[in-house]
Length: 95
Figure 1 (tube, one colour):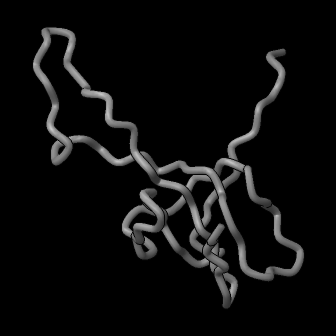
Figure 2 (tube, rainbow, N blue to C red):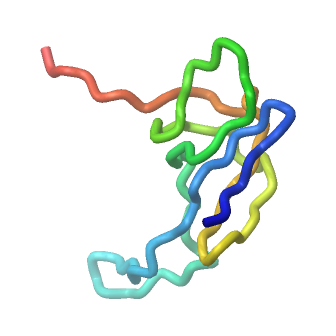
């Protein structure tokens, strides 16, 4: 099995999109080119980063227009600097 091993404080996010068609409430199909890309993705691999606040498996919010998209073994990944991650998505209890 092969995997990507990022270096230089880079993080790899899985941005593989589902192949489900999106439709409006009136039934109009929205093409891929018109869809807004999500700004959250799960962390798959990380370079060596001291005191990192995230780990593989965490879902993070990242800056738009950042990183490099790469296709590897039939999946799409986004390789971006650790500093371009804005927040970690966490579950909280309702008060």
